[in-house]
Image (cartoon, rainbow, N blue to C red; front, top):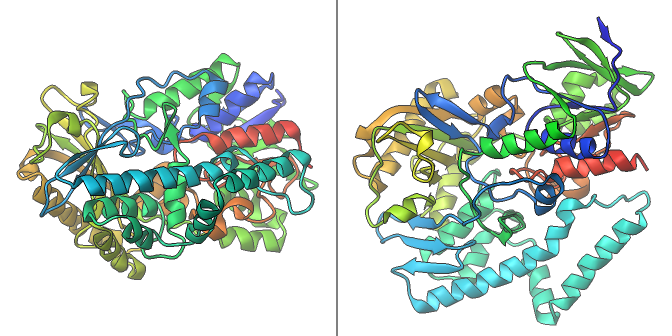
Length: 519
């Protein structure tokens, strides 16, 4: 069976990047079809019931949705009040960071240390601002940079120059530093050092002492929510509400969205895209296909190695994309108590990373395919701010837990229960009695994330976000400007520039690239 009802573009994948790309093209008057394999849109950003009456999102914080996406699609993302961050420690009282990434600090900490953090915060945000414009620009084209790209890079150079000689030298000095050393240079409080270490390493196979780990913190600080750099927001309805808003924006432009219809094959004829084949519809014809799924899946599984040069196949296979973060959802019969925290702090995020050294010790076992007996984690209680996520009287706990190597030496069939026990031991130390409140625990290892969300390696960036896999090397050299090495095929997932997080930037950038056409 062949569908001769032509589309200007077919987008594979109904995650947030695919939906952003679809909405952008739809606004430009193109007839667009989105194919989503699952019966629900959003991928890891969807809100789903994990136990009767209890709902959560695997991507649980809004901190990167790009303002250009919000503006272009006219999105209403709800309240923009930054969630506080509580830094927990087993032997010290918690401290609370208010505003966007610690504009104000509350708790048992010296005034001099507050001043140290404020100065460092301002410096890091100022440096990250130099990199922020690159989020929505094409990586450089080494074969011949367009005038707009030259002006963009010239603008970055001018911004660097405006820092002044001292700051410019310091920016260049720090660029490839590890975050542990940066924390030691500026701070004395272990809890604040743990914050920097965790933020920089989250989502990557890096520890605080790993070379270039500071880049992870810069990437974190290029994000914003509600117009505030570094802000974290827990959206009402979970992250699925953001996905729904983007999907509605796409539908309003006439975009057709089909769920439960996975792409079986990207059909290539004489080196050019002919369309997409599905089991339900046969061949759906379009000369433009945009992959908003993992680039390895798109190129090796849907296009197929025989249609690609051997060099391209090698590059695709060499993309590092093995996840290192597990996701924990707890259905609780009541709200747990965290000593020293008032109710308003429970509506934010709780960080269990008591020092940079602790984060490094947690990373060490992951180098050898093992998990730490004292994992570090980012905890939210989303039902505090949105009671609809849990039954009356109940509560939801959602946590990102690191480090959880994709290839666990003993295998996750054996190791999962042990890892959950280690996590609960840490939680019990900070919230005594929480174990007695657990009605159900769902632990998603990277292997589970891979299977549930069709995300190879269970890596939420669709590829390590490290210096050798960024800019013109993302996803690989030769496909760095969203155009795949097959005529008519484009790449729009987190595996493309600038990377992961619920930002919509890869989808928006890819849509703009499609409309410009290939150079």
